[in-house]
Length: 201
Image 1 (cartoon, rainbow, N blue to C red):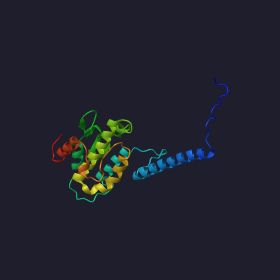
Image 2 (cartoon, helix red, strand yellow; image 1 turned 30 degrees about the vertical axis):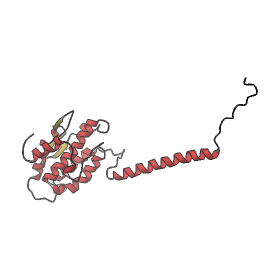
Image 3 (tube, rainbow, N blue to C red; image 1 turned 45 degrees about the horizontal axis):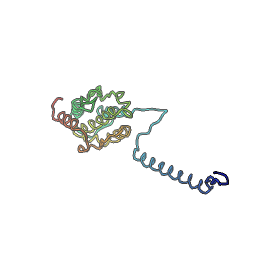
Image 4 (cartoon, one colour; image 1 turned 90 degrees about the horizontal axis):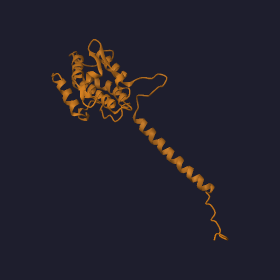
């Protein structure tokens, strides 16, 4: 029977073992924090301010408008680049609900007199809605494409604004510098190219 048997004592952690356990956890937390800081350092530019909330795609529209209306001068001759850019945007296609569709779904207005107005409200859930994220990314790609083909001189000004919006768009591979080879989606490039050569979509 159990009479006379001795129960093994419960194992106990020494103070040294507890210290080593928490020291290890602290080191892991510091490592995670360091990684987070290093990643966030890459996203320099746009900073969310809860007291002054902004929508980066509103800034996208404003930046393009400022260039079209010459509020921010672009060092280029007067060759109707504004009209050509807007034609490119109007004839371009972006990702939409399960298909490629006209960029006019997001572009409200684009002309040399009124500038560039976007329906940015259609992109407000891009953080949680993958299709909105794809539309947002394709919009940045299309704007960059049209600028690179009609007013390359505007690309340095555009790049910072593009990057600010890019950092709020999940899984977006736009190259804001205007390198066409980085653009994704055959439909986007082919249809934007059609706009560039003067064909309507």
